[in-house]
Amino acid sequence: MGKKKKILTALVITVVVIGSLWLLQRLLVPKYMTGIVEGAMIAEYYEEEKDHDVIFIGDCEVYENFIPAVLWEEYGIHSFIRGSAQQLIWQSYYLLEETLKYETPEVVVFNILSMKYNTPQKEAYNRMTIDGMKWSASKIGSIKASMTKDEQFLDYVFPILRYHTRITELNRDDFKYLFHRDKVTFNGYYMRVDVKPAEDVPTGRPLADYTFGETAYEYLDKITAICKEKGVQLVLIKAPSLYPYWYDEWEVQMEEYAKKHNLVYINFLELIEECGLDFSTDTYDAGLHLNLSGAQKASKWFGKFLVENCGLTSRRGDEKLEVLWKDKLAAYEAEIKRQTEAVSKE
Image (cartoon, rainbow, N blue to C red; front, side, top):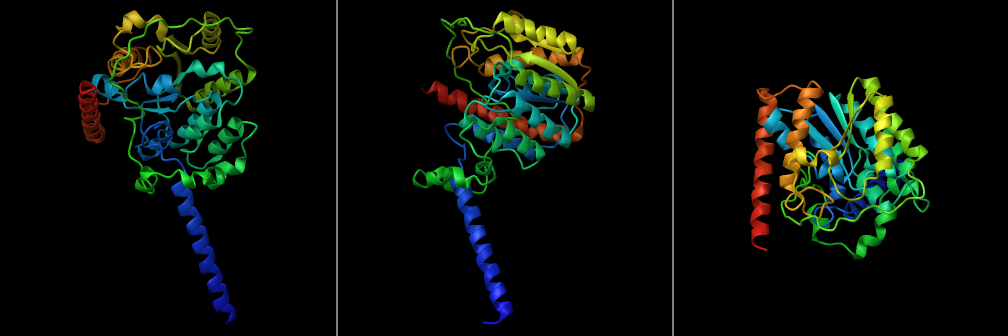
């Protein structure tokens, strides 16, 4: 065999091996299309036109409590939620850092519940936020900040190292969604129309120390600084979720921080009546999150606030956005109908 033929053969073998490993890796990584769908949320942003007026970042208290479709219908506000389950504050920062490389919204809304966490928590939640990010310096920063003591950086670079044991757990979804994913949100909003009233909501247990940690404050400072650097208005919120419990001592710290940094801070727990929320009908899980009717009410109130206090103006009439939202609203309304019919049959 000639030298050139040997080199060519070696290259072909290398390509086949790498291609096979890549294909196997795609097969083994979780698809998050049924059951726990939260792991599919982060990646959906990359398919969007990057021209939003408002970007939400945070945990389930944003992606289940606010609806971009309502903000568009009522106020002509074009928005997107970059939310994920138990999104820690350093993950929010790196998602924001990445987002601001794609676009510069007028307003960034950050839900501050994650201030309660000062250290990495669980790998499963890390994965649901980080795996969906495209590779960038922001993703690398998020990985390094988020890893628990048992995690390895290379497992994020080569997910096959982490998920190789799933070979015995593969199901139909792993093959169906090998090369594509369906959308599980509506501009980041995760819809639930069912109802489970809030009853006997537990109060918070006394804490040894109510002070938010240094790392949490470090990344809140980073979020504040990057918004100021980019000329973006930062609005801090505490969403209207009754649980986990929000302590008065935490509230004081957020009020002081907002005042010190000249930021808008809204605690929706103090606006439940003003928003018209009724936790006997407006939650699907006993007060942890709002259902569709509750999120519609919170979104209508917040949209009005953004217009009146943050200088946002309606973009209705923008031909490109009108076409875009026509399709989005059709999908949104179809999902309302589908879920409503499914609940009625239960």
